[in-house]
Amino acid sequence: MTITTTTLDTADNNFVLGETLRPLLTHAMGSAVEVFDTSGPAEAGPPPHRHPWEEIYVVLSGQLEVTVDGSAQIVGPGGAAHVPSNTVHS
Image (tube, rainbow, N blue to C red; front, side, top):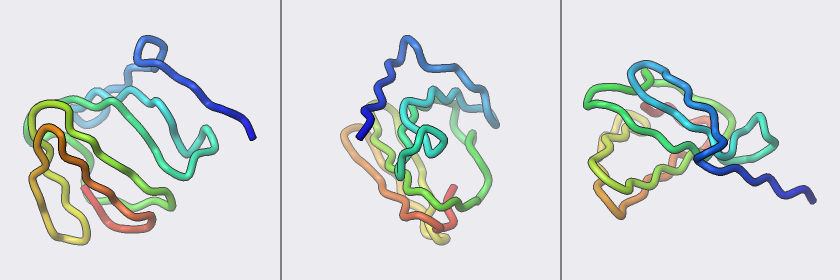
Protein backbone atom coordinates (compact mmCIF):
# COMPACT_ATOMS: atom_id res chain seq x y z
CA MET A 1 0.00 0.00 0.00
CA THR A 2 1.28 3.49 -0.85
CA ILE A 3 0.96 6.43 1.53
CA THR A 4 -0.04 9.76 0.00
CA THR A 5 1.03 12.85 1.92
CA THR A 6 0.39 16.50 1.09
CA THR A 7 0.65 19.72 3.05
CA LEU A 8 -1.21 23.01 2.72
CA ASP A 9 2.11 24.65 1.84
CA THR A 10 2.61 22.38 -1.18
CA ALA A 11 -1.02 22.05 -2.34
CA ASP A 12 -2.08 23.86 -5.49
CA ASN A 13 -4.38 26.88 -5.14
CA ASN A 14 -7.35 26.36 -7.46
CA PHE A 15 -9.97 29.08 -7.90
CA VAL A 16 -13.32 27.54 -8.83
CA LEU A 17 -16.69 29.30 -8.88
CA GLY A 18 -15.67 31.83 -6.23
CA GLU A 19 -13.92 29.36 -3.93
CA THR A 20 -10.26 28.68 -3.24
CA LEU A 21 -9.63 24.93 -3.23
CA ARG A 22 -6.38 23.35 -2.10
CA PRO A 23 -6.41 19.58 -2.79
CA LEU A 24 -4.87 17.42 -0.10
CA LEU A 25 -6.24 14.05 -1.19
CA THR A 26 -8.23 13.40 -4.35
CA HIS A 27 -9.85 10.70 -6.42
CA ALA A 28 -7.13 11.34 -9.02
CA MET A 29 -4.55 10.42 -6.34
CA GLY A 30 -6.24 7.04 -5.98
CA SER A 31 -8.41 7.86 -2.95
CA ALA A 32 -12.02 6.81 -2.40
CA VAL A 33 -12.61 10.09 -0.51
CA GLU A 34 -11.50 13.65 -1.29
CA VAL A 35 -10.01 16.16 1.15
CA PHE A 36 -9.66 19.84 0.24
CA ASP A 37 -8.88 22.97 2.22
CA THR A 38 -11.63 25.27 0.94
CA SER A 39 -12.57 28.87 1.57
CA GLY A 40 -14.81 31.39 -0.10
CA PRO A 41 -17.50 34.01 0.31
CA ALA A 42 -21.16 33.31 0.99
CA GLU A 43 -23.05 32.01 -2.06
CA ALA A 44 -19.85 30.60 -3.65
CA GLY A 45 -19.40 26.98 -4.57
CA PRO A 46 -20.37 24.47 -7.21
CA PRO A 47 -23.85 23.86 -8.60
CA PRO A 48 -25.56 20.56 -7.78
CA HIS A 49 -23.45 17.66 -9.00
CA ARG A 50 -22.51 14.05 -8.24
CA HIS A 51 -19.45 11.85 -8.59
CA PRO A 52 -18.44 8.28 -7.70
CA TRP A 53 -16.41 9.23 -4.60
CA GLU A 54 -17.37 10.38 -1.11
CA GLU A 55 -16.75 13.83 0.30
CA ILE A 56 -16.39 14.87 3.92
CA TYR A 57 -16.53 18.51 4.97
CA VAL A 58 -15.02 19.61 8.29
CA VAL A 59 -15.71 23.23 9.21
CA LEU A 60 -12.86 24.95 11.05
CA SER A 61 -14.29 28.48 10.95
CA GLY A 62 -17.29 30.25 9.47
CA GLN A 63 -20.28 28.30 8.22
CA LEU A 64 -20.95 25.87 5.40
CA GLU A 65 -24.34 25.31 3.83
CA VAL A 66 -24.31 21.83 2.33
CA THR A 67 -27.21 20.44 0.32
CA VAL A 68 -27.52 16.68 -0.15
CA ASP A 69 -30.39 15.23 -2.19
CA GLY A 70 -32.24 18.57 -1.88
CA SER A 71 -31.95 18.82 1.92
CA ALA A 72 -29.84 21.78 3.12
CA GLN A 73 -28.08 22.09 6.47
CA ILE A 74 -25.77 24.68 7.98
CA VAL A 75 -22.58 23.31 9.55
CA GLY A 76 -20.52 25.52 11.88
CA PRO A 77 -17.05 25.31 13.43
CA GLY A 78 -16.28 21.86 14.78
CA GLY A 79 -19.00 20.27 12.64
CA ALA A 80 -18.71 17.82 9.77
CA ALA A 81 -20.89 16.73 6.87
CA HIS A 82 -20.62 13.52 4.86
CA VAL A 83 -21.73 13.22 1.22
CA PRO A 84 -22.08 9.61 0.05
CA SER A 85 -20.78 8.66 -3.40
CA ASN A 86 -23.14 9.19 -6.35
CA THR A 87 -25.34 11.57 -4.33
CA VAL A 88 -26.41 14.95 -5.74
CA HIS A 89 -24.92 17.70 -3.57
CA SER A 90 -23.85 21.34 -3.58
